[in-house]
Length: 104
Figure: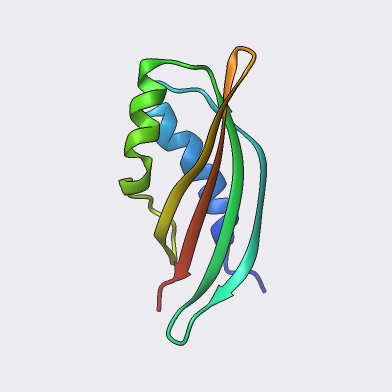
């Protein structure tokens, strides 16, 4: 029995919504995750490739992204890093890594 969307799906919904609030049209090109656990927490490591049109709003969003708050039911974003930012034609590609942990 499913308890609803997993952290990956919630993250894939939250990122474009968060960007749209800043006037950015963000697309997810690819997304994947692997299970992760420590002695006290369980969760997942997510790798996402995003694309957007270059703009000052995008630059500000990228700068603020590691500190952004995301509401992911049953999960917390423990860490978010912008791993790379590349200009490809008239778009910017971002590779981000996210660690989510399950709330208990």
